[in-house]
Length: 576
Image (cartoon, rainbow, N blue to C red):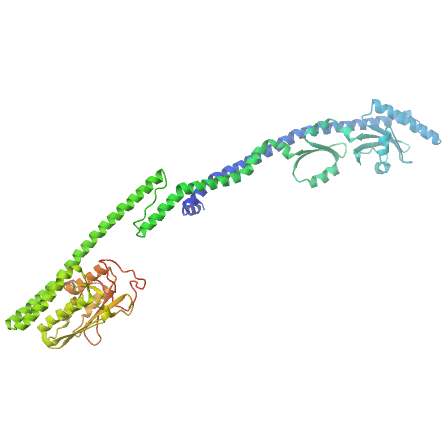
């Protein structure tokens, strides 16, 4: 998996790689920052909870101690009241006197011995309540007392809680005698006097267990809640601390934590912008320049607008392109000179054939004393040498090449007489086209040398020049035909496979001409050799219309090498 990820990253652009490297560094740091902040918050909350839990434990023990003291007092009052007070009464007057005696005793105890806020007497039969504090007695619900007594009966009851608008009352009763109950009452503020010191930083309450459960269900996590239940009464102390208060020392860290992603994004954008300007842009300019050089644009240069290392690189690149361009030009010039020398050498190889044949004709005519023919041949030969003197031009107009070829045919007609005939047909618009010198004449010479085997029979050579049907707007076709024996099939097969036997290289006429055409047109020409169905050989040359510099390849839109597969296109080798 990691190998695939790294391999994918290797294919990224330089900008993406820099961004990935930046994120690899910043994301772990940001994650650590978030983790440290969360851990710090958790530690602080735990420490605050632990310290306050200890305080609440102490407070709830004090509450339980007071409630236990009240329990002991009730037991004491019950025992004493049973022995000191007469509980028998004959009428209402004695009943009231008994209650008044019991009330006075409770008042004395309230001042000297009772830990409660108030004491009360409850007659369950008459549902009558008498308290040491009239205000608390009015608040105490007789219905709640009656239900409480009905629930527990003469047995010892548990502590009960009665909610009031200004707080709550905590009370407990004990059965004494003759439906008479004695009870104690606490106000919630009396039970938790020490807890008032906590209100300066927290919200603390003495609640019933039911109230605490209802509040807990509605909490949204904005506060840290610590609670401790009483073992004596259905009460609990609930300390509510704002998390903002206890986490205030971490506010700066939290702000940094929230600002960090935005800050990282801004720094990343600034970082990428600076890298693009300082690194990516120069590299991109260098890359584009190299692509232009690869396409052959050697005039491309980079402006030296950067300083430092890239300035040296740009300066070195410009110098390198300049040196390579000059070297390429020098190499190309040398190659052209070499090709021209080879071209000239190939032209010189053609001439011996003609010289030998012409001297042979002159010799025969002089032997036969045909002076008129010798004179005529001398004129033809003079025209021939005049044309040869222009061979340094390499290219010639088509009509001049045709005149030169016809001059050569007339020389050979003086040799073979009426047995050699020719026909030349050139469309007028093609007369000004250009063609390499001594091209058509070479193929005509090969027709006579290798096709005119039966010298006692008529031999016809035909030359046609017309637009090429494959692309008449840019190419024209030169077709040379004869009525001789045609090409050897073995040699035609060699042309198709481009594999030539050793003896084939002795035929330098067509071979040299094909080489010259390839040197001149750079492959932008076609040569088709074939035998005619009725007998004889056919040579077709497909050449560009326009005049061409030496070795320059034609890049016409309508021509692509390899099109027109029906043509028999031959390599630069000759045969016959």
